[in-house]
Image (cartoon, rainbow, N blue to C red):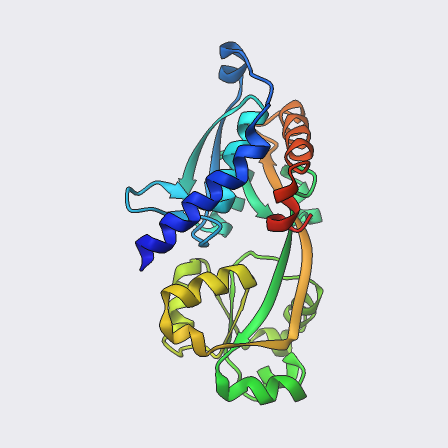
Length: 262
């Protein structure tokens, strides 16, 4: 089943980005050599994951490859957690990461591209918590013993930030750096809720039958824009400008808005 899903996604990705990649200005060999970038990425299917040949694939991996091509850059990928990406950008160990919400602390060590996609998060729960979701706030759920785990370092938006800022609530929230482990905790009922992107959850439901029983909780729905983040230690502003131009060009594809919401 996993292989069939991967094949379908691969075909869709190819069809999607032929339009945005076609007609791109060809760059000279010397130009390409001037821009060699190492991108950090984390497991988050169908946006990004490892295929059977241990190569990074997915909607977002292909998008970044396309943007790099439009920018006249060569790109390599290094798999690590979202939080490790942040540390590596700060230390100049990688050049860029994606899926990053600009914040003031991050701007101290990273440049941000213009937004390239709209991100949505929804709280998903097991059937036993559906009714409680309809009649309680998230704070009330947590106080009643609801076990919530978040991905370490991820900005989930204002609703979750308010809960995290309150020490009396935040002390009951668990954190996990590895997205795959976080999902497995949820599947094993070690936690009661998980905050996830609807497209990611739809993919997970196709590959994990047990997840077909989970439901979205109306307590926490958040949308925000995310950008690519570049290390100030290794990437000049001129490269960021080239990626901004590439993002603007890619957005002109009629398929772009459908997939990325921007």
